[in-house]
Image 1 (spheres, rainbow, N blue to C red):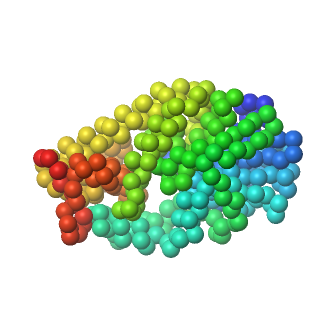
Image 2: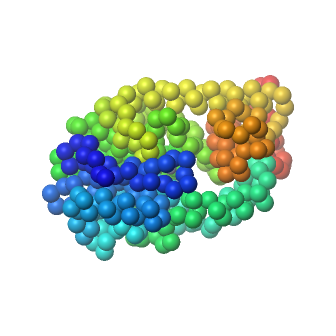
Image 3: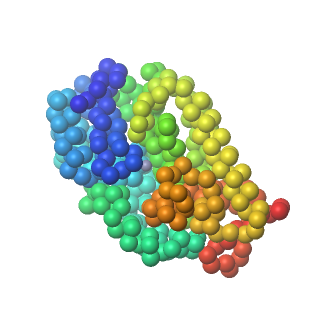
Length: 324
Ligand SMILES: [Zn+2]
């Protein structure tokens, strides 16, 4: 049941059925007049039950409760339309809301994966059963768009919105500078590395993510409240680890391309992954898809830096080293 982390600031651990993330941390900030709930869980009965029970135990009036959703992924956004009352406001960033509005199903994403060497048919059938697909919201409620630097005052807290694109295009954290609390969403996680995937050639999410890490590194944080797993304190140390992880991955990508030009799927198949399967071919399709999305984000950054080049007219798209 809800755990009080700081005066009037609680955490509800929301189970995520069939997700390797296991739990979502929903944070509840109780004010004198209104309450703010940060992130909600999947649109799934198990999540709904835990959230409703947790909010009831905290004596929270649904008609005086607002929601802040850090980013569009279903484990954060999926349940909000079922929790929000008629008088609730749902605060959300613009880039992710535009993605939701322009969403035309998985088709474009599957085609893009195919252009990057991924077996399209395998992906199409797997995505129909993906929890993010099954447990997203059925309809999108009215969203109150918020911008970088906007402030929420609730009880003793004064949370500023910090735009941290990378894990999603419009990902936002909340930062209270006097209590040194960072509600981090999926921007900073410990024990697991936030997924940075690229599903469009006009984006450079890893470039954005590394810049967001540098930005958050400057903040004076004592308590990181992440979207999953445990809380931690030394955010600069964690950020340095994440920067190093991506530095290593970029070097590994270049090393793999040293033996000749390759598409993203082939690069992913040759990378070292922290997975249980014996071989890449035995690895479940969704894991290979996530891995390929990660590799594309590394390739896109290397391309932006001029360290690799895409072979013109190639399909699947192949990349080669600028200076072999
Ligand atoms: Zn996420």
